[in-house]
Image (tube, rainbow, N blue to C red; front, side, top):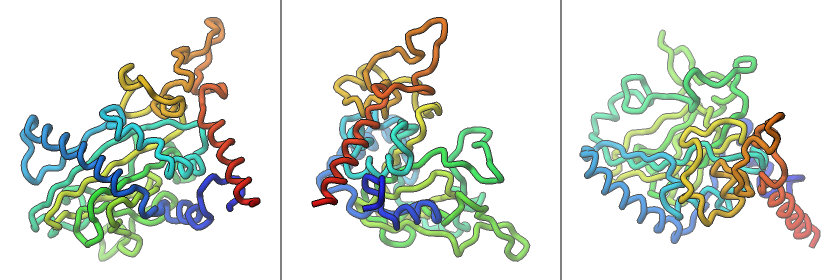
Length: 302
């Protein structure tokens, strides 16, 4: 076992640092996939009717962790949360959670250069408006995401995400024949089976390949970042969403793990954000990680 890690292997750590991502096959069981697809299909059908979306138009929803229990429990999935804590630490919360349904597209979309400005999904790196701060031209490690892929993306042009290896550390762009293009030697098309998870730095440059597969691509993304950064999908979750949450789920949903609302502490003269200076009770992931680490250490001794 790698020292001081809950689950992360040395190879995964190397890939995350150098390439900016790694894959976890069979991250979700067949039953989990079926449950998630059942809810996604219902939402997709309902909002396509309400919004009069065309047959080829994608459908997306944000803050899905607040929409249904099946989405809420995915944010602290027991097989994946240890990896998140290994990579980001325990003082974290959810920045975003969103579903993405991309139906089959006309063959003509594949005639455009992958990720070009003229394509249906140009190359980009996730960041707030006006961008992340740069340190020597590099974005610090501000956020990570887990992508859960629920349909078969194993073939080329099935609507899979494409990432540029190492583009969280160096520019993806090169000059070729007098044009500025993304280096094709570094592009990785995430062609995976259902149930696979992509653990990645959202500072990676990425786009989406055309979907010529004949079936809709369906996936979910959960973004995690430090608690002292504002989330993008919500300010505070609706009280109904917070009902019945575990302390860890409360933390991940941007609340204090105690369920209390004294976000600025209890001293009116010297208020201080419990996100900036948390107490252990505010971040139950700390105790959870310490206990899990003890369990893994004892298992390794046996």
